[in-house]
Length: 178
Length: 187
Image 1: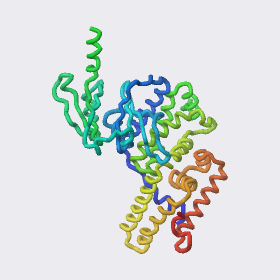
Image 2: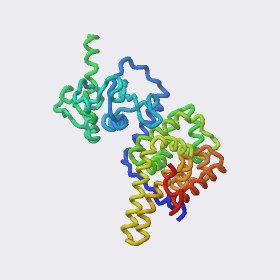
Image 3: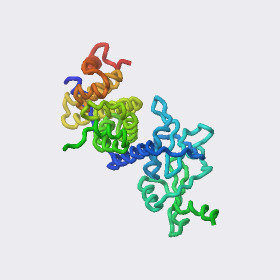
Image 4: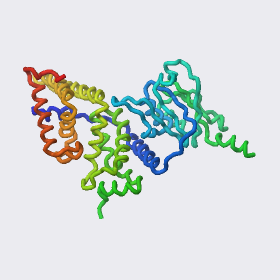
């Protein structure tokens, strides 16, 4: 057999989840919109340490709907990601290497020293998406009030995320203006 | 009137960035399969978005005389894959084991035994090629690109593509020789 034919024998297609192309399109369009309307610089950026940043980015996108801002990624020549920024609504979060800046992933630190509260427009749909992506649920939504509909999930490295209905965010504003 | 060419769409996306979404719609599936064959589903899923974002950022440099953007996208993909050499090597070796196992199932003959020994060596040999030769070989053998498309993807003259592919063939033959010095991987 000729070398090219031998090489051809080793050609093997990969099996993809059907949703991959749709997610890629959304990520591309989000990046394009960013070019059109540059975001204002945030004043506070929470930084979360992860042992496996690539896996964390993939999980945060699939389960919670975060999107990476690709132009802010710091990546070595070897393909190792050192830091990335993800956005959700009008906020951003840094995803960093565990150990950098003294921050330790709960997976190896054994404790969660903080949690993140995220206000989402449709908390029920968000919960279903997180469930489908295999997120560990620490507190399921129970009941109808804003507080009761909130849920908490633990990501693969043990960070705790609390998702609350969006109107909770407006409460302090009403208070101060009233 | 037919659909606008890739060059027209990319041209339009300079003023209307969202038009670039059509380039994704046209080529993302092909590009995703290409990345998947090379580095597996998990890596490919991460890379396809990155690849199109890079293409979007570089759209000003797309040569508008080209009929299709696909070779250009292959070229960006080839560069991205360089960072995932380990995933590629793993996949190549796994493919070799599968091909070998398949031929063993069908006929327990001397030929099957040969296949069991041969394909892992083919995988090692491809793995051992210099990056530029491996890229040329796989674009030709797996993606079935024409010389012209390969030249566009690798940004090389056609003559250089031909000679690179010939070098890859010669190298493989040498690395696969049953006996002799070139038998093992070059490094």
